[in-house]
Image (cartoon, rainbow, N blue to C red; front, side, top):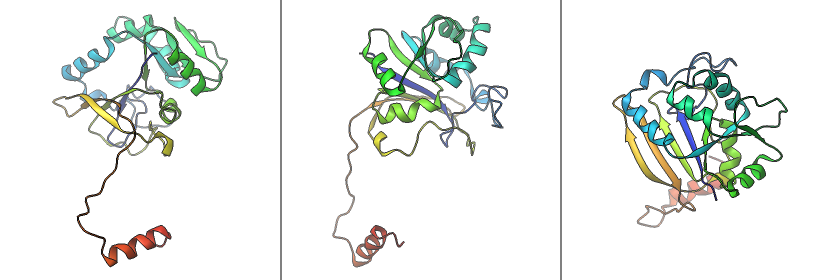
Length: 221
């Protein structure tokens, strides 16, 4: 079975929209290119390790269209050469032609389609961007590894990669981390089962605590 890795450039407040440049997203987002000031050789090395393994891309339609408009014309860059060569699996309900080399459409229900792809033979799958894919795939437990590249900036608004969905609740285990001199944090995490909970309480709750809990449960606080 293939493993699915989600790779994300995110701000401190979880925004992943238009990290690459001001012209990347023309829908009114005003901070396009917010990652650019923080790129250096340390971050480049971490990114290189991510892309050195064999993989195929798993993309949402919008990220696919952004990539398809850019990377075929920038194949002289290492990432461009890699993305142009690998197979691209696109989750989309649109019938618009997929003109980028080695691209194929995943049809039907997205979770069922990705489940079938995951269970097929082939290299592991790498999600880049594609914020719309994450809520459903996380809820279905289909993502095995998340690579979070967090930049020291708060954007205030924009597309985020997670949703308020109890079915996505699970623990993750840190397996690799690094940071750059400019404050970018690189963390790779893998699924680690159900969330475990506990209590720091060392004595029974006070009368004030019991009263507070009663009001909380009744929605009166």
